[in-house]
Length: 296
Image (cartoon, rainbow, N blue to C red; front, side, top):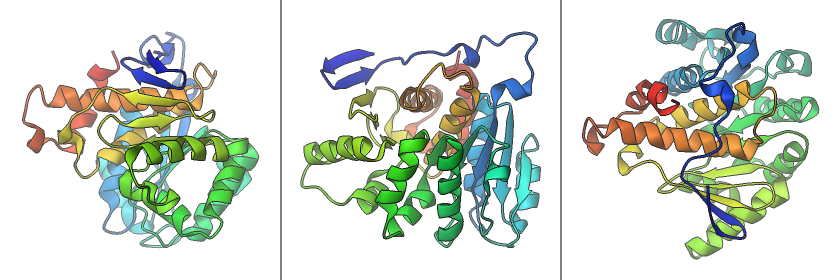
């Protein structure tokens, strides 16, 4: 990383943990973490599929995806390597995870394709993660549901004080959570302040995605291209960061460095894609194919 000033760094290549491509010969899948993804709803199962594929391809040893009943066949067919946890509702997330159930997993990724009608399960999941100190990645409708809660910021702070939390908003999701700002400098300062206040790592997705840490430090990513402004790109990133956190069982990296690594690799996959095709033709699923090269 290249330091720009006393609280800003440029991520030209982040710290590279040994679990990505120097695995011990005698290891097994349990050594690389069990990730829970809570994703998908009727009509939006593609988001869950993309996140699950990215999580597995990034190296998580085991992935369980919690989906509504109507999503089971889609998930089992599209991602045979993933296990499925089945919700009691046919179309959306209604199940409230308790401590005993959540304790089976090393990390939770929540949000892609969920819809916004699962406020109670969302709250229960975050509160359980805080009690268990489980890492959590929150994206998409997970963020939108937080923005709809009267105490969303306070809930984030309670969880962020106890557990590693990574939030991955794009511009509109950031605005819903934290408000509008007159200019980009003000928005960056607000991002730094919200990371300090809540204890959450915040990934502001966009051109040169910006990652803010718990102490307000800012990391500017250097990979990626405009072709990645396409449906499903954020779902892939959620799966990737979740997969990295799942593997970091020996705490080689903190949450903000896991986020920096995920964002950098995510952008690198997009750059590899457009070496072979146009930016306008890039699909999120194309990026997953290049994770195997970007992580070398």
